Image 1 (tube, rainbow, N blue to C red):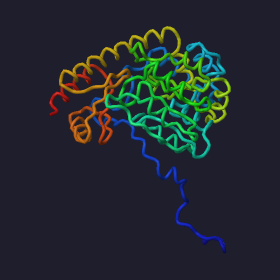
Image 2 (cartoon, rainbow, N blue to C red):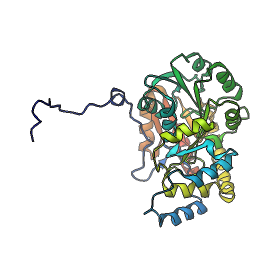
Image 3 (cartoon, one colour):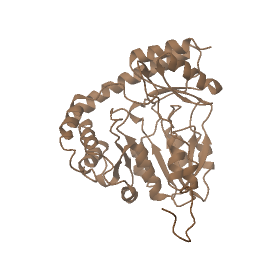
Image 4 (tube, one colour):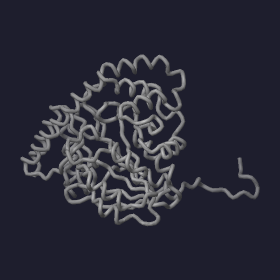
Length: 362
């Protein structure tokens, strides 16, 4: 059919300029055969039996829509963290929740300050939400430079993203550093404290995110059940915020954003028996993290003080070459071209295989 008379034809539907310029999100490589997958920050342990049972029971009900507002899950999370339910917003992983957070506060062109290198979804979410990214380099030891981030705040700044522990480098911000940042920014600037790896933190100087939230109404805390709780395949994340901010975030959220299986699994994962099992798994991962980091340092490698479930090697221009060597040897890692390599903590055999591989690099 020919175009209507007088209507100019166009070969393509134009995309928003910000969308056309988006960097691609690169997920961790998936094994195609026998390989150790250390390319994604997943829990290497299988689902807990009680969680798996909840998923199996819920599977018989997937012909029905899930609870749109995930009320029972929200109430369970609220009880777990010790906040009222009106301060909890859930979503399809903390990535989706962060997008809802920014969509709730950003006007077109508002600036979002965040560290780099940090979580690679930050520039994507910022652009999709209509914001302008302002990136601040991390320090040589992989830590966030919060004074520089504070200095980058302008009249156009609407949000500051603080990833702690920082993905992919690993260190946490310290409580006094975060307090200094909060003291220096305007009260109408949102400070998002992204605590996706909270359960793995053993640094006594790390901030108490809930205490920070209670004292600063311009703070939103992000958390997830994907990492420590082993629900990466179901995607459950949540924001903790002042009730007014939480209501705004909830208003921008995707309807039915947390599916029925994920809701039931999340509720089961936060019950006392499951929490006890999860804690045992986390302690084992932390012990392996220490062993891997120490092993790399004994090889003469500079490893930042990671408080997450991964280690970082700043390999610069050799990153892609060495990641390809690792893949050929059956160990999948996550390269960031030109910067470095993030290696998730996996099973003992997987960690041993990586240490042996790294020992051969010269």
